[in-house]
Image 1 (cartoon, rainbow, N blue to C red):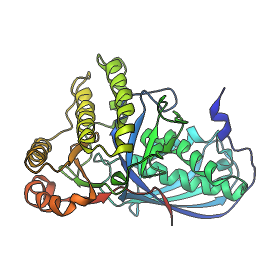
Image 2 (image 1 turned 90 degrees about the horizontal axis):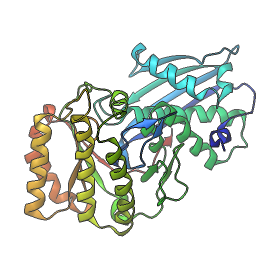
Image 3 (image 1 turned 60 degrees about the horizontal axis):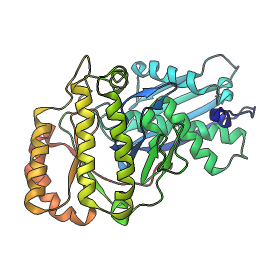
Image 4 (image 1 turned 180 degrees about the vertical axis):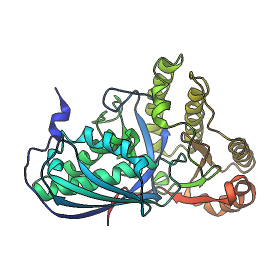
Amino acid sequence: MNLEKQFICTAKGETQGQSIWQAPSNIALVKYWGKFGDQYPKNASLSFTLTHSHTTTRVEFSPKKATEKVSYDFRFEGASAPQFHPKLDAFFARILPYVPLLAGHHLQIASKNSFPHSSGIASSASAMAALALCIMDIEAAVNPSISPAYFFQKASFLARLGSGSAARSVAGPLVYWGEHSDYACSSNLFGLPLDEVHPDFKTYQDTILLVDRGHKKVSSTLGHQLMEGHPFATARFEQAQQNMARLKGVINTGALDDFVDLVETEALSLHAMMLSSSPNFILMKPHTLSIIEAIRDFRNTTKIPLCFTLDAGANVHLLYPAQAKDKVAPFIASALVPFCENGAYIDDCVGQGAKKM
């Protein structure tokens, strides 16, 4: 059965107006690294949805003569940004079969981030999720009969076609994506919010320590490609699936010590895959390691269950319960901020998903 067919829009028509959505970045607890087919994940993943790290996108749409490609203008942070056109072209080519009415509209797209772009804070995830939600507003304007559940599920489906992890940036506070026998209705096509969440994890804190605000030297796209033929790929995919099963129980019961162990193992496993690929690459910086060591020393001394995780970059996400914030804040200021570029960091926390503006 071709499950993608459920997302083909058959409604026809023209509309004019604008849509503005703010979509959050997310930080994966179990990492997705390696894909196949049409942006399908080699393993399931689970992430915290963030609050303050987000992309805001405005799309103004108007009718025009239909063409084979989506017609658009794009501005990022107020300036023309042709460097993003190849990724946008690929995205629109993938989604056009599912939203064919886009061919009869011109889109004026303006996007901005609340955090540094392309530095390992999942900017593609928030950007593609925000854009997908705007596109769903266009579809809903032509076909107002679609349900809210379908609207958001298809938004996740479309976002995934632009960036895999964007499937997890529509809902919150925790979202899973990828087929897994322990997760009800799990799918490679879209992300779904996790229902059984202990109260501690609904208010979890994420302080993002900006070790390197510059662009990553290796794109996530290349990193995923390097998992093809990787000598440890099969074992890694199995490890991730096992950790997904473990994490479900941890999130449900609030077992913070187990959470710390699992999340840090996942972060280091992700970077181990990069270190052992061919070609191999190192995205951590010396200050990344210094922060990790400081976090572990502080945890061992205070018994506060804070932990780190990493995306595909040098920056460190410090995760800890909200009730520990008063004790953790002085530690961040004194022991961790000196390792950040120009002392820069972002105080973030678990959020509820995208917002229409």
